[in-house]
Length: 474
Image 1 (tube, one colour):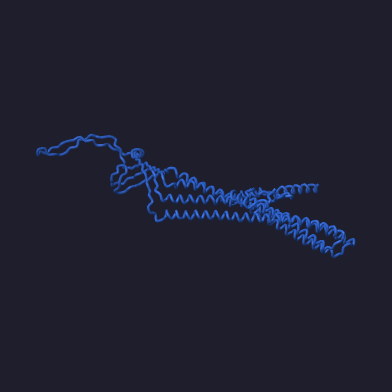
Image 2 (cartoon, rainbow, N blue to C red):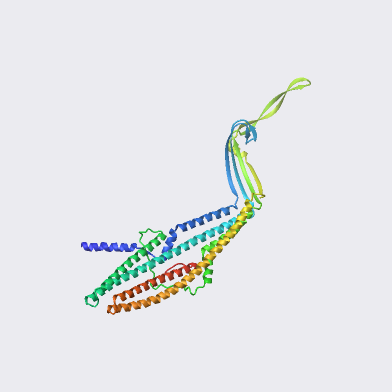
């Protein structure tokens, strides 16, 4: 019963552990890497900044609106704002105002800045796409490295098992007297060498898996198992059929860094137009409304009629004459009453004519001209690099194809030779040295074929990258 229970626990552990080994194909690796990439996140932030700049440039066409308020405590002789008269007493005042203004003409500066901000945003988007595509190519490279290391590890393990099987065979022949005792030592040395190769290939595999995990930003201890493509994997694109002009033409249209370079050249041209606008007059219109309050402010509630007496001389005789006068009745004016009564409005135009600005405006124009030439040269350099990279990629792919075909032929021949040697060795027709030599040649042919296969596959994927095709391994 206890044994049955232990078997259940072991089977459950094996099932859970197997399910924990999450399967990763190339597309899943690329998608995960792009989601986790700090470089892509930074590129997306650059897009956000470009969008903000675009909004700012668009809103510069609209009128601005600003409000202000001042609270003052005045001492000594100063102008009382509600009466605009000098007073010598201390008083409290409060001013409120709204101001607005809009640019009517500035030499096309705003229009060009809006267009430039749109182009800069598009360039930032192309930069982000270029970062994503470059990361995808890097992931594909490491993914193929893992596949290669995994297949090489399988070959090493198979060779190790084959050497152990051969030891069993040679022991049987020694026991029946068909082989000398010292033949066992050669096979044991072969087993030791195969075991060492197996350990080394496993280490290489684990290092390549670690490199891929690091690019995917996975923890080193995270379960990870890549999907092995079918053994009959074939390359769909023949590099011998593709021409340089065809690949280069498509590369110019689908490579994001080329598009970004062209956009930055357009932006540099607009930057010069923006700089030229500073040499032209600009016209603005503005309006304002304001009011104020003072604790010395008064309001007239009515009038009293009083007799004002004056001493005069009539024919040399002193006399008193009374005249009727109206005397206003005042009271402290309220805060909101003063704000309502003291409202003032204003509107005006402003004309700015640049005459001399210490060479700043002209200097900006000269810098913009240099910026245009710099952007043009940068774009030309990108295109020249693309041309060189595509030429090299096509040459590498064609060479890899020839090497792969030759490796296939050699592997087929060496496999047949080894199978023949295996039969002859089992019959005792050849010695251990000749058998080991045939085995080593066969192992080298297997490894050479594996290297040629993945090198050819990688070279073709590089061409797919320039053709704008998705990096898939099916």
